[in-house]
Length: 314
Image 1 (tube, rainbow, N blue to C red):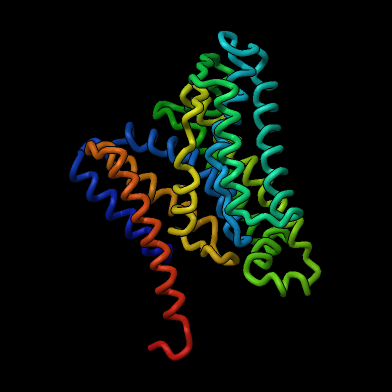
Image 2 (cartoon, helix red, strand yellow):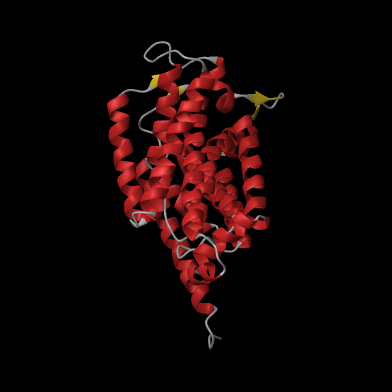
């Protein structure tokens, strides 16, 4: 979908939900919505990069969950080790790094399809989480809550929104202007041309899956920080939601085409829809149906756009 269509869809959503529930457009609702969207938005950056190479990352949910769990376990004085937050954060991110290295190695060296690799990894991570803990781990310390629960000013502007903006600007500039960003597009859009140009596509793909894992890990730690609890049940929908946001924003599944600005707008559309449906009392089952329908619609729009570009089409 074009960015103008996404903007129009976002406006329509906000108008409809503001009519159905007057509280929807109040700042006390919009800022928490932004804080919740921030977690998915960070995951979606890495997912977009994977899609641009022509792959998927279905392990983002398990990745986020286990990074939060490890950090919470390390920091919890009640059920864990009670070590300083810096140690817990470093080990949580180290786990995320290991996941990215494993995914990247299996995809580029063992030549296992990204879909199968990351799906299998998500199952492995789910089992590992159960071995660590079956219950949420509460860590109610100021240090643990800093990156997720900190707010600024009288309006209590959330730090996660600022973090999200910084990451999108930074990665957006990197994707548009850096050599690495151009190599990502070339690797996914035309692998043969990338090979002729001397681009080490395996290294590009490996690095992309490492970055995706690190971003997912950070998002999971940030979410645990926001709710002061490392929950083993989070992230089950992150793969679908991040892919839906990226595809809705114009990233094509075949790779090589898409922008982080489009993904950001896709995140806003899906996030506002989810929050609005919750506020009017729609059940999780119907919210899942809505999310799946959006993904199908986005892919359908891609197909129609691609067909309209073919020669001979009026």
